[in-house]
Image (tube, rainbow, N blue to C red; front, top):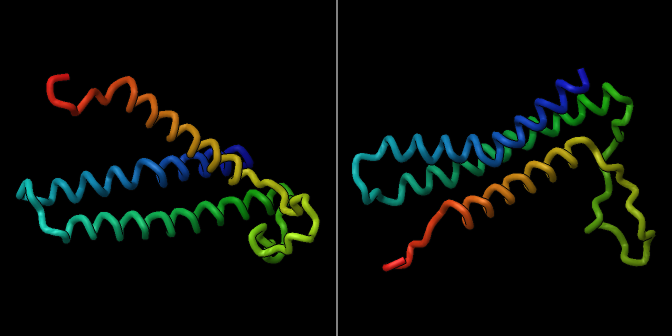
Length: 130
């Protein structure tokens, strides 16, 4: 069950960064009949991606809590964030790293690496005469 929860978090994070935004942009572009759309489709994509990020974030947090309950590592109560602590306080972090932290950092690193590979290897140049 733990592996399934981790796999669901990994798939959810990839869908959050890549799947849903691409699907939303593709769907809105297919609904347009003109090559010069008004501002409406752009706002729809912007609002849709924002709403999708909130929903997927809450779903991933629920999966992380389920994993924490399953493994007995769930932290009860709200954690005090690092930006909300005294600078004179302890320097070490009191918050334990969760599986969702690792999954999200890995997915962002892979997405950034994929973007760099695409940009430098496959994008080509948009400059005239090159």
